[in-house]
Image 1 (cartoon, rainbow, N blue to C red):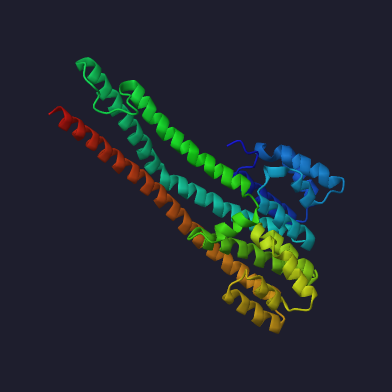
Image 2: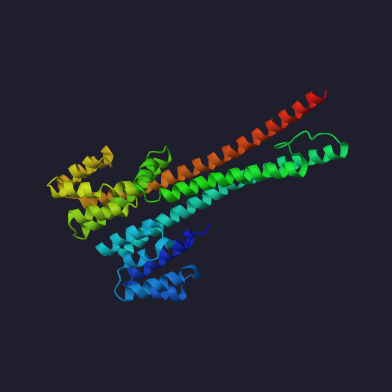
Length: 342
């Protein structure tokens, strides 16, 4: 809510402009300077600052890093690859496609969860209204309320019920916020997330799409295999993958092949390693990485779409469960009260 990070829609537009103008041969600091003057209001200030830094000799990645949390981590890690390899325009193109996909999925999730959330709000208000009305009736008839919350009926009971619901939602949000803050870019958190059903396969496909794209670009640029692999692992934006960079690079330094070094890390699937083995033998690793990057990008899109539907379904189930619980809870309290009176 209070994050300074640029909105996804603004990032998509910025990446598109950068891709088109860099492909036309314009210097990056000139492109950013123009965006600082005539770009969208949300990115003008940050683009102007980036242009000023780059104009005095700061690297693109270092200039972006100085902006802190304005850009997502993947933005910085991919820019480092683009700047090192001289493929900034292509990197901006890949970032544009990634942020576009993420934006589409966010919109899908919101549209699919709008009605269940509306039902939830309506159910909470209805239950609070029933508690309030029964309390009013009890006051008029000078009898005990049929439904009470912590012994409170009427307006006080309705307020207590609303407080419980809002407080529970706040606690859930607070736990999520603490976990994401403490676990941000932490090895244990990223390893845990990769093991979660439905979410893990989606994250893995995303990480591998970044890794294969970065490895293809770095190897094509003529970088040494040591630097290419390290940069590619950093481009994943996943702390668990990045934590294995030193071990993989050390294996390569000790004379192991790329296949042996990647296999020893335990990060990669058998199918991926088979592809590496065949391409390393034929000397076509960059070409294979290009093919695999497209494959993982398609897999990421499928997995993210599936995950969005699962998340929307989970929200709907939670709302439906709450409504059903509310109905049976009110019915049991009402029937219990009637039995007590008769």
